[in-house]
Every structure is written in C-alpha cells, then in structure tokens.
Length: 137
Image (cartoon, rainbow, N blue to C red; front, top):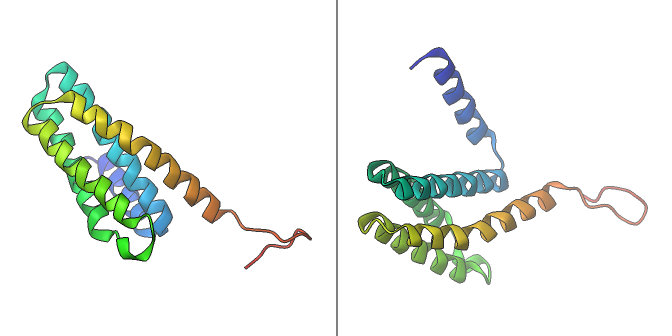
C-alpha cells in the first residue's frame, strides 16, 4: 500500500470511529447506494465480477443495518426490517441471476431512505431555539 492509500485508509478509519450514530448511519447509506450504483454500472457493462463484488459489499452493509436495528423500539422498526429483508433477497437474486433490474429496484427503494436519514441527522445536529433565541438543551 502506498503512502497516499495508507493515509486515506487512516483518515477513513478515524472518520468512522469518531462519527456520531446519526453520521455513521448516513455514511453507511451513502456507501450502500454507491455500491449499488457501481454494481448497476458493472452489470450494464457485463463486468459480472465487479458487479458481484459491489453487490456482496452492499449485502454486508444491509446485514449490519439489520444487526443493529432494534425494531421493537419504534413504530417504524418492523417495516424497516421488512425492507432490509426484501433488499437482502433482491441483492442475492440480482447477483446470482445477473439481474440489473433488481439492483435498480433496490436503488429506488433505498434512495428515499438515505435522503430521510440525512434529513433526520441534519435536524438532530441543528440546535433548537426557544422564542427568545436561546438554544434549548
């Protein structure tokens, strides 16, 4: 590994280790969608090995999201778990059957979730103010 690659790996590791839970979640979604977009591009080009690599990494991210989800803690939890389970099966199908449409389905399903998590993280990071301009704790 060259010096630039080592520095980049160290920076990425430190960014993940120091990220808030909300930031970590948005980072995971960003990487998940990047993997899916790269897989789609590779599938269209017929680069099945590259597509498989990205689809497998996307599956690892979804597995982590499932593992860390506590669906019993909020009303939307079971629905989100169902989405993750559907995406997992779809990514497996997309990889085994070289089905770019399944990859596109997953992108279409997950993109609005990524946007929603980014919005929620931004709102959580913005301090609330009372009527007198004082920040609320």
